[in-house]
Image: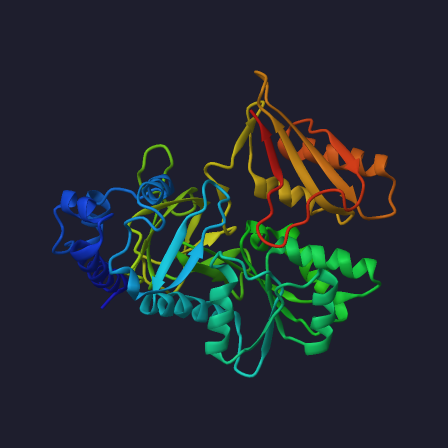
Length: 417
């Protein structure tokens, strides 16, 4: 049985459960005329409408607190997580035990693909808040046999001490926080390149697949960086290719993936950029069918795998709703981040976008964590911005530590409208 046949079989199992008891999806499935299952993945893509984050959030507003995308009675759900709210109101997401096992299974695949082995150890320097993220990574690491060290409720300095005390092989965090720990360690006179951490899995932001960001973390830590991406409402979706770090490999056994042109809705060709549409082939208690993730990706063929399989070149390139047009130029956060992180003198930064006038303006505020003169650094950055984007983007240097610090997803873009 090929990949498409396995995906179709799993899809129809999920559809059968949803058709029987999921009030959110029952009308959609009925309208598709496929309550008894789809004949092919092509007919599924043709007949099943999209699911959007907006309609899920509205459903939870109208049918609080959890909405109607639940296929079983509430007493069968054992986990509650919450989306980060980066692009709207946070949503609660529930899992049955089987659903949570499926999520963990996807993270176990990520751990194994990155080379984790029983008997190794991993440290998790984050607050263990309500979003799914590293909760699943933590539980899956235990399943793989990796000794797992939680670091919630601690300062960055305390977490650095934990690293040297427990000597973990692995660390899981956001790219931003990995760089923040480097800055804190430098202030304390600690060289993290000498730490026992030799491999870092990052997620929550695109930075792990941005060469400039990845190189900065790898040099500072003396460690190999692996990227990963997923969402609370979807689960873990991708992991770094061991041999080609610019590629994210996809878990096609767990998701039916489509990459569509954002304007026409038609599938893009390999090597073209489009929006990632995901269908979960497990987690039937809270499924997602043709979910518009908003993530922009560039699919490329994977040598030696099924013709339906593909990887993402450059990782997650950005979000369809994050792009800002400044004087006719498309600015994506990941592209700006790549330029900023090519300057090792820069710590935190903020992007200010002013849409209040007819001509949209953008400017950056940055922290200079080096001994280089502020004026020279600002001039060099403005020159680089002009070279990359063809725009004059003013750079202002602010006091170190004056900009917000982020442990989880960084929010560096401030837009005035």
